[in-house]
Length: 411
Figure 1 (cartoon, rainbow, N blue to C red):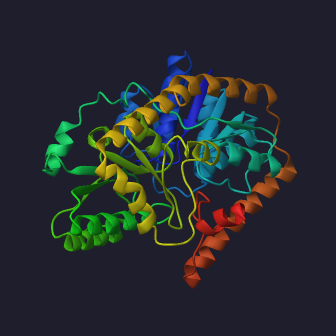
Figure 2 (cartoon, one colour):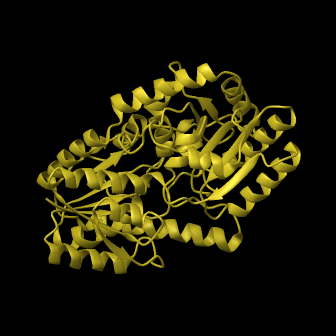
Figure 3 (spheres, rainbow, N blue to C red):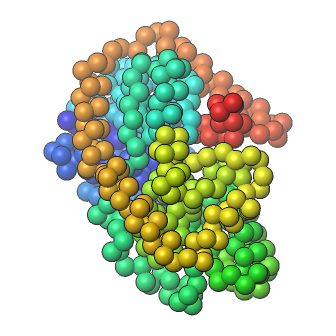
């Protein structure tokens, strides 16, 4: 098959890493994969993966009529069999572009915690957790498959040498290093990052030997920098390091004693054999262990707390790990085994190829009624965002992960 994989971004992030890694593994199965995406931090990784990277502008609207036309021409020129959009703007570009114009089969993957309500119900959908799959079926989507976020277990391994990363931080050998790798975004991430800074600052001020390293960049950098400075002042030394975006974050995972994270970052942490504390929103933090893992397998590597600031929850999960290296070791072994047994990249690629074949065989032309419904939904979404900007009120995130939306889903 000739396949276009359209990633929504090339910043450091789980969805786009999955697009690249599954694309590489799919190509290894004998298919031709073209990656359509902007230029960005992950571009060298895509090049190393051997994918042809067709670059589009970072200044495009999302969705973009220009990209719709570009995809249509690309499909005709390269004889593409199917277009795979990761997250809702690429999916809409593909559906209103080559699918509407040419009848090209389209499939969408949504690794966010919620799905845009205006996505076409006839478009095959792939999600990362079973609970979301069931919700989408209840909402009228005709075909919803589960592909849990995969991990390259050969590239992400406990044998990876990360000693240089620890040396860069100039830490004492007995310092417990806590690592979080994520985009510094206001939605989903910021609340937990601020709580992590506060918690580590207080622990150090009370005599605990612990250091927090934050790897990533993004629009919330100023707030995270301020929280790190406050933690360093409370701790009386450099207890939080803000390291920016790393093209290859594996050294950070490899040298960590404990990983904090959600989604794909959480899974990569476990692939390196590290104990994991799952980050969510509304004060959610929970240690992944044999008692709690079923929750994450069913609901996703995320959670919603009671609305507290999260410092107490993180502290209660973190303190036993700081105090007990044997516990860290046993949970690391547990996590690595889970990844090997359930989240292999090769298995995900084989499943994805079957889904491509199914989508091609069952593809039907877009109806006028559904084109109107989708176009109206996208327009209404952006009108709401525009009005929210004008009146300076909260607006939903593009990935539909806004807390209020998620809370309403869980009531």
